[in-house]
Length: 110
Image (tube, rainbow, N blue to C red; front, side):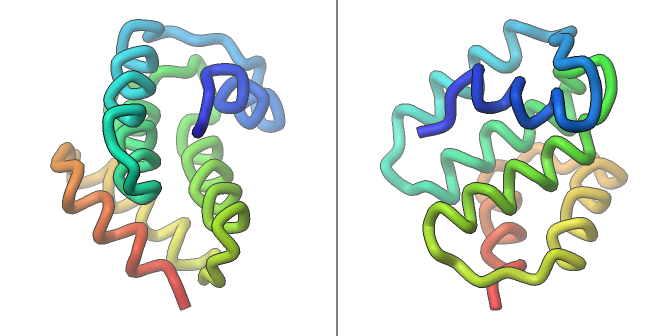
């Protein structure tokens, strides 16, 4: 299970870890706890990071790193180029549908 602290630590690799939208992060974390599907869990958090811009800086890099970290935890091989493309597409197209984000993450698997 991903925590607020985990998410902030990842952001601190790229920025200052300053949260601008605490409510959105808390909502995403609470929603992710309601499912056992790890791809759906990460989709809630990725949506919050990218669409709600929860951090002051480094949201795209944080989202990419978080996806790759979770995939590694679950011993899933992935294409880092696809992960980057997914992050950009979610952001540019303002994709908010959790199931669509979940499918996109699965598409990054090899």
